[in-house]
Image 1 (cartoon, rainbow, N blue to C red):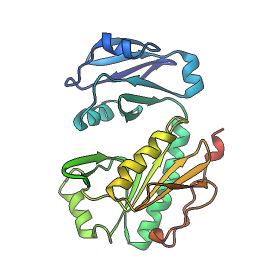
Image 2 (cartoon, one colour):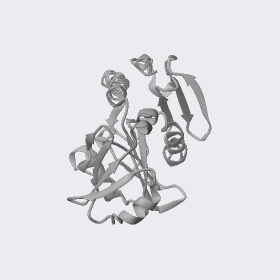
Image 3 (tube, helix red, strand yellow):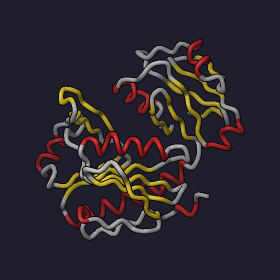
Length: 254
């Protein structure tokens, strides 16, 4: 939660140790204090927020999935990313990025309704997919937007996930889309797309960078990507009939 222009509160789960001395040593550029309800108060230098539109906290130990979920739920007005050992808090462009994300998602949703070939899913959808290199291990991951075709997971199976309250799809999506919410996120999201989504078997991955006005497109079986202007629509055989425009409102970002 943002208290003032450069002061923030983040509530952590009680299972996660907040050692103020260690945290302060790890983050000399921040002023940190403990507050009630296992909450960390963070003061950031104003000129850094103005310049970067985000700040990072170096954490002393990793977060497990329930702890990450707690942070996201309890701090749901905040835009958080996890790139251990860093927790990244985005402070700028949230409204514009939110509008861009909605416009991107709406085109996919309309297309799925028209074609009846699959379903689109929001950033709240979990994927818990067995690690291809170690099937006994599960990789948890979310994207800003995903599409699951009925060819990959039948309509009945997808409906079962919804109705029975199963937490997380156990197969990777047909399409995963990640959208940068600040200028810092491009490299972490390219890494995430390459070593999470494509590694797990996603067929088409798209990283959207409104700040650079670029798209980075990954294909199944290839960790490399091609770079494309954001003003050029995405047309792909997996999305037959969809001329996907990622450029709406990006002119608002300078």
